[in-house]
Image 1: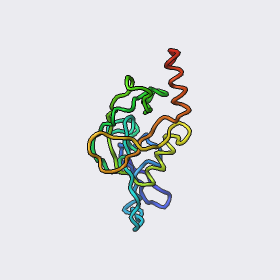
Image 2: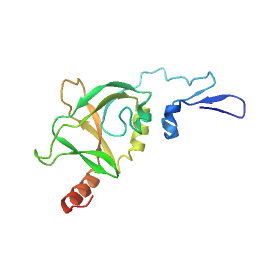
Image 3: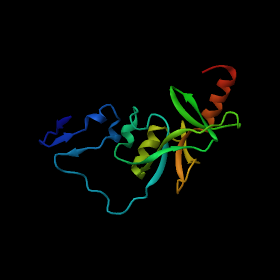
Image 4: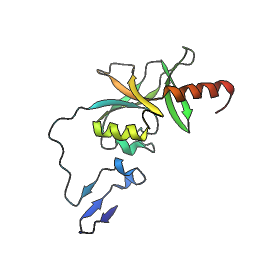
Length: 162
């Protein structure tokens, strides 16, 4: 897709990103590309398991980040449905614990800030280290349902509400 600014410059957006929030869109204006900060920014590793995965509806937030590979968590977690989306929680017992499949991405601090806003950190989700199976060489963060909402989810599961 292309648009024009009043001064005649063009704005180009890849069709894959139509429907994503503006903050997540990669863009160029004409042939101009914004200069990147010359200092090396710290990169974080992030485990995603739901709508942020490749091919899913919110993957646009990670489209310009680096995919590192598919991964499984250690069997200490489980997914609950929260507002129609999967949400990661720490399992309360071995019986409910299982491995969660997802992807590991190397992301910039700017990307994490956008994702934190999207995931409504710290109100709805929190970003916290997750233990992955296999030989991942460094700490990886994931978005967990916040303790307050996880408690609400557990109470509604016990009472049969969803």
